[in-house]
Amino acid sequence: MPSDSMTTEQYANFTECIHEIRQRAEQDDPLIRRLLYANVVTSLEVYLQAVALHLIDQAPSLAINVANTKKFRSMRVSLEFALKSDIHQYLIALIHHINFHNLSDVEPLFREAFDIRIKITDEVLDVITCRHDIVHRNGKDQQGRCRNISHKSLDAAIVVVDQLVSDVDRQLLDTFGALFPYGE
Image (cartoon, rainbow, N blue to C red):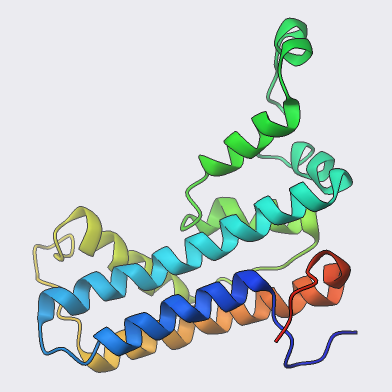
C-alpha cells in the first residue's frame, strides 16, 4: 500500500497548476479572479483526462474496461474501420473528446472502467456551475447577476476541487500503484 505522501505525476501537475492560481489570486482584479476560478475546474479536467489516458495506455485490460462501460459499449465500428485503424488510438481520441467537467458522465466511466469513485458533492457541483457561468455567460448567473469571485470564494473552490482530486489520486495509488511509478 502506498504511503500517504506519495502522489501520481498527474497529481503533481495538478498541484503545480493550483500553486500558480494561488500566486496570481493575490491580484485585486475581479476579472482575473473569475478567470482563475474557471481555471481551477480546468485543472480538474486536465487531471482526470490525464489519469484516464495514462491508465488505458499502461494497461490494455483497462482499455477493454473503458470500451465496456455504459458510455462506450453501444458504439459500433465497421469491420473495415477496425482492420484499417489502430483501435487503441481511436479509444484515446474518444477520451480526448470527453468533457471532464461533466462529472455525471465521468464518474460512471471511472467507476465502471477503473473501480475509482469520484465523490460528487454539492460543493463540487456549485464550483462547476459557477465556472460554467464564468465561461459561458461572461461571469453572470442565469438571472443575469454578476458572479463576484472573492479571494475567499476562489480559495474555497480550490479546497473543494483539491479534496476531490486528492481522493481520486489516493484511490489510484491504492489500486494501480505499479502503473504510477512517480511519487513524492
